[in-house]
Image (tube, rainbow, N blue to C red):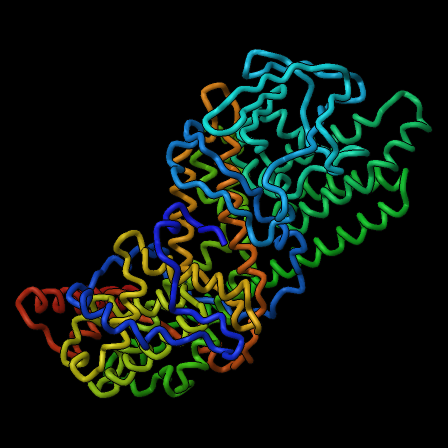
Length: 615
C-alpha cells in the first residue's frame, strides 16, 4: 500500500495493529507502548487546536446508511506512476510509484495503447509544446498499439531524467504517464467515441479537479456537444447509426459522473443537460435510453437522501442549541443527564461514535475537498457557483469534531464532586482507547482535544485521582510533533489491516479529518495548477485524486455495530458549554490558584451575566 500523504513514507511500518485472522479485535496498543511513552511524558502539547475553529454546531442523529453505493469509488483510485521530474511540481519530492490497491489498472503502470484523436471533420492542428504539431493523442480502451488515425503526425521524444518524455499535440507524457496538457486537449481526451473510452482513473481525476478551471456545467456541456458533433456526417441515417454505436460509451461516462459526483447535479442546468442527452440517446438506441432512465432515478434517490440528511442536521442543530437552565449553574447540574447515566460501557460508546463518523463521512462528496480551496484559485471565473454550492457536508463533519471535543469537556467540568469528575475522565480515556482499537482516529483525536482543553487540564486535584498511563499512551499516538508521525504510522497500520480484513469491523478506517484536509490543502498550495506554457499541471491532479480516492474507499464501509438510539441521541443533541462557560465551571470545581485566574473568573461571571440579561 503506498503512503497516502507526502510525509507518510518516511516512517516505519506500524506494529500496533494485527492482521491475524484469529482475532476479531485489533491488538491493544497498550502492551508495549509504555516504555516509549515514558520518554515523551514530559511534554503535554496543546497543539491539538489544529481542528478548525468552526462555530459550535451540534447535530444529527445518524441517518441510515445511504443505499447509494459508489460503484466507481472502489475503482477510482488514481493512475499509478513514477515521476522523476520535479520541475512541474516542486513541492512533491516524494511521489509514489506503487499501484493503488483498488486501481482498475493494477497490472499496468503506464498508458500503453494510445492513439491520435480527431473529430470526424478531420484532424485538428494543435501547437505542440516541443515545437512540433500533431493530431490529438488518446488512449485506446482496447489497449491497441499507438497509431495515428489521420496520417503521420510528428511526436518528439527525448530522454528525460531516467525516463522518456513525449509530446503529442497538446498532451505531454513522461514514462507513458500524462503530466500536462491544455484544457481543450484534456476535455477532448474525456470524450468517448465508438472505439475509445477514457481510462477510469483519468475520468475520476479530471472530473474531480476540472472544477479548478471551469464550472462542471461547462464541462458537461462541452463533452456532450463534442460527443454528438463527432458523429455528424450530414446523412441522417448514418448519424443515427453512429449515435447508436457511441451511446453506450456516453451512458457509461455519465453514469460514472452521476455516481461519483452526484452533488454536481444539484445545479438545475446539469439536470437539464442530462435530460437533453437522454432525449438525444432515446432517438437512436432504446437500450441506452433505458440505462439513462435508470441512472437518473438513482441520481434523484441520492440527491433526495442528501436533502433529508441536511434537514435532519438543521432540525437537530436547533434541538442541541436549546440550553436548559440546568446547564447554567453547577448547583443545578444534578438535573442534567450525563453520559455515564446513558451509557457506562466505553466499548458501546466508541461503537456509537463510529456510527456517527461513518454516517457523516458517507455524505461528503469527493469534490468538496477541491472546492475548499477552489475559490482561491485566480483561474476560477465562476465564483458564484462555489458560493452557491458550499462544502456544507465537509464543514458539518468538522463541526461534529468540535462538538465532540466540547461535549467531552462539558461532561468532565459539570459534576460538582471531584470523584465524579475523575470517573468521567477515566471513562473517556477508555472510550478513546476503544476508538483507537476500532480505527476511529477522528473521535479519538476529538476526545484527546477535549481533555486537553484548558478548563479540563487545570483541574489538578481531579487529575490526581486518575491513572493517566493509558491517556499518555494515547497522547503519544496522536502527538503532533514531526507532522503527526506516530499517527501516520498508526493510520498506515489500520489501512493495511483494512485491506486484509476478515471481518467488517477490521475494515474500518476513519482518519483524523482535519489533518487530511490540511494535507490536501498544502498539496494544492505547494504545486502550481498551471505551468509557464499555459498547460494544466496534471501531475498535481493525479496526486490530489490519489488522496481523495483513498478517502472514498474508507467512506464506503458500513458500520457493523448495533445502533443504540438513546446513546446516539445524547451524543448529537445533549447541550454543551461554550468556552467561557467551561472556564467558569472549571473555576467553580477547583477555585482560582492565582490572581490572574481570579481576575479571569470575575470577568467571566460579569460577561456571562450580561449576556444572559440581554438574551
